[in-house]
Image (cartoon, helix red, strand yellow):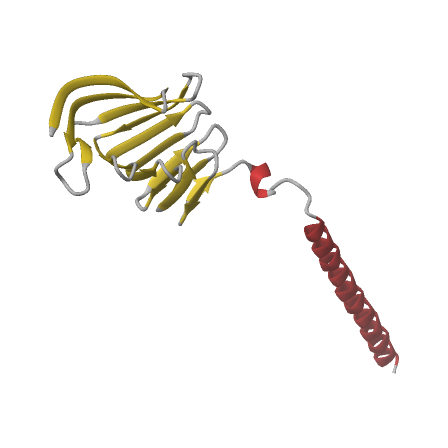
Length: 189
């Protein structure tokens, strides 16, 4: 078991620097089953691409890393900010490094430069470019929802509706003119 305080370190995978960890306290416990790293004083994780450019920042109040399974569990004010401008917030997030997936079963708020989503289930690739949010509510641009664009089906339905109104109107007019003629005959007698 190892405990380190005031940590600012780089972590590599196959000779390529992947992450920078900044934390107040880092505990490595290989006696537990499964073995894990514990960051109970918060964590700031910076993720890099292969050319050492920052891909994302990940921050949380508490984190657990299961080193044998290569799985993260982030808890308490989990925040992610990617270089594409996406911002993610939740109270819990799982990250499987082997399957390259992130997910949460807690309320999550996702904001991109052009949309905003909220939901109780979130799943994404680790780059956060392909994601789903279910049990959602959100704000979209009108064009995303097809509002403001003519829809061929709507045009057809509107045309049918107008035809129905015209036909009903012409029936009423012809019925009224027939009644007027009959009423005129009755007055003459």
